[in-house]
Length: 635
Image (cartoon, rainbow, N blue to C red; front, side, top):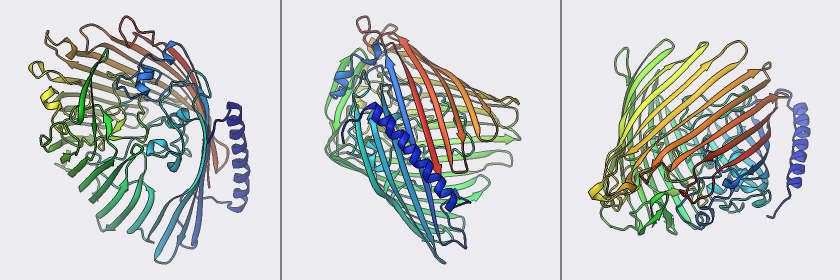
């Protein structure tokens, strides 16, 4: 490892593209009919699939917000998070630099008469800004990815003001995975890095990506749309981080059984392990029954986190409120879930979900105070032609699925305490999907959609309220988690709530596709006069307008403009939350041949608003320009 210059990174990028292009031409001569699938045909015993990409990311930022006043303390472990510099629509940091990230993955498959054997081999390379490559490029090659726990790339919390401040170089070659199974696909065993074949996301979901995948469009955080515009060849990148371990899948008739054991992302010196088993009986046409059990354990060094029930609990007084901090270790989480999706009547479809969770830890403030938690979801919907409407009820208790699991770096979301929406408890990932309902919330959601045709529309409205207030007596109980509101005195404890409105619309005239993406969250918690620091009252609207036009089947261009804003009060009796970020984007994708395609995008952003330290703090204003260029190869 070592520093690289921006010029060197760009030169390496150009060289990799040249090598990739020459390799593409040679492969095209050897394989005149390339297949995108690694599966072998009956008359082809050995098949080799090749995928590669090279991604260049360059960014420049300027303004007083590039060096936030909370930055040094935050890098040293303080829970007081900086307001900027980060992108409010994706939670990815905005820092200056240049980076090149690339990977080559080869998948040979041997298909015999009874069995099929496959392996995945690869090489990953990174040069330049470790921050940019980790958050704005493709998900880094697994054995290089610091969010998965790799120590090969030195990613640290820094707020660089010029390019080259966080540069590094790393390259690694690895056997990523291997599998053996029956030729008919009824049984397969996999080892290495893998994605689960099936899971119910209220029981377990793989850790969310930390990076914003290269794209030619963007959306609001709670979008109901189908993603950024894209040519057909350019398949969407993964939306989750892979697991590392062993996995077995067996299919018989309508039933599929899966069992896996895997390591989860964790900080250096710590460990987190998952054991999971699931059964799915799928009748097709919307009728599906499933059961799943999950066990998660952690070990090694204790980790600092923003709850009060760990050892050495403390309250840090700050302009962002009274922030809780403690350390936790030796966690043990078990979750059991059952789900049924079925036709309730000839006209109505229904979903019922129930989860039961238990939790314990070695390092806690008050041993023996924890208790089980439950998850409930009931939904009913009706579809007639192009339109569909439905209603959901959710209850996600404060003791459900609350294991504290940091990514493989100390912190990956740089944002103030009142940021919303945001990942669960900042640097931790929750082992379930917490959208649309977060932990310690109950309420309802109504939704409607009109799909297909020249005009499409999707909309939803939700109201969620805290189940239990986060008074100090609750906050010190082992396993009690609230994903947003700060602890308050028991005598003045109140219940907070959230309203959520989301709208997505599309118009598809002959000259292109126009989409509008909008969401608005309002957060509110009443405070008594004696405890003004408990007050929460603000709204956060955001929208994205995108236009995309196809120039034939192989070229797509798009332009988008979006805005994220927030205004109100948090932990103060006056308006201390008031900022907005405007984002513009241009992009294009084009396919040069049957095996290659390229993406290019440029993104502008600017933020202005009140300082994060009222009356005395510097302005958070900053602006930035991000350029992404990527070439993919599939053979």
